[in-house]
Picture 1 (spheres, helix red, strand yellow):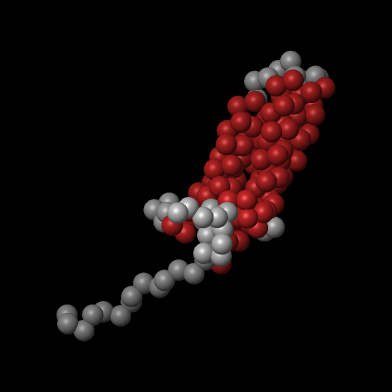
Picture 2 (cartoon, rainbow, N blue to C red):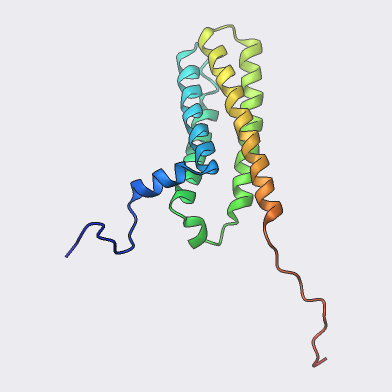
Length: 154
């Protein structure tokens, strides 16, 4: 019989979501997703909607990493080095958002594109902070030392 959560050790998806949102990484990823959606709406509403692809792609990539970390797939699927992948995602997001936001603020005088540029600068700064935290995680990661002692049977 299929039974609900009766203390059998199964945690619901909503419980994982709520507990992951209480962590610093969870809040940062959620803020990145929300701001990417806001930037997308602003760029889509402007007369120059050419930069919507950046916000869509970064929102999708960030959502994937949010689900991976929330469901703890990073501990189960060890083929991918998740901290390095997360660092790459955050650095690319920061650079893309900072460049496209500065371009839209400087070149286009449309109100919606300027608002999207301002929100884009904010999310670019958050991506840069996220990449700083990823570097900190990579620095603290314990690596096993290589065996420098030659084997005895040589």
